[in-house]
Length: 255
Image 1 (cartoon, rainbow, N blue to C red):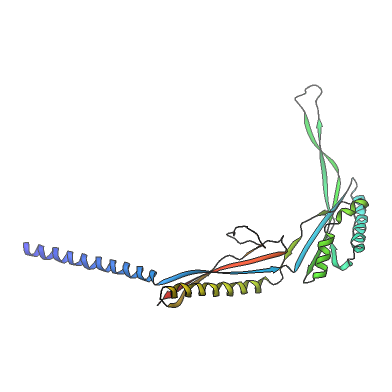
Image 2: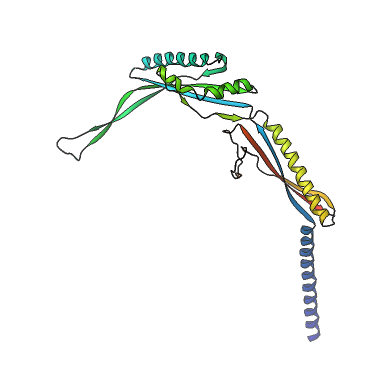
C-alpha cells in the first residue's frame, strides 16, 4: 500500500514538472519571438501652398416693416455689388445668399409705483432685421485668389455708403489632398524602412519580412507652427502656406 502511494506521488510530481516545463518553454518562445522583431516609426512631411480660397461677409438692415426691410436689403445689395464690380471683379466671381429675416426684441422694464420690489420686464418687438451674405471663392486661380485677398481688407470703405460689411476669416484649402496624403504615406514608409535597415545593420543583423504596418493621423498645420499633433488630426484652414505630415509604424522580423 505504501509503495502504491509513493508511485502515485512520483507520477503527480512528474506530471507537474512536465507541465511547468511546457509553460516555461512557451513563455520563453514567446519572449524570443518578441525579441526577434523591430518596430520603427517613419515620418513623411511636405510644405505646400493652398490653391483654394473661400471668403465671405454679411451685411444687415433693420425696419419695423418686413417689406421695407426687404426693399432696403435689395438696395444695399446693389450698392455692395457695385462696390466689388468697381474693384475689378466680375459678377460671376461672387454670389449672394438668400435674404434672412429675424424678429428683434428689446427688454423693457416696467416698475410698480405701489411696490418698488415688484418690477417686471417685458420683451417688446423691435422690428425686423434682414441679413445677406456675399461669398467669394477661387480654385486653382492665382489671380482671382490674389484679388480676393486684397479686397477682403478694404470692405470698410462701404461705410461711406452706409453699409457695414462684417467680414469672416479667409479659409485656405487644397484641391488634391488625396494625392498629397498618398505621397506622404509613401515617404513615411520609405523613411521607416531606411531607419530599420540602419538599426539592424549597425547591430550586424538582417531585416526580415514585414509583420505589421499602421498609419498615424494626417496632420495639416501652418508652416512654422509649433502646434502639437491632435489625436483626431489637425486641418488648418487659416494659413495659406501649410505643412502636411503623417507617420507610419512598421514592424519587421529579424533574421
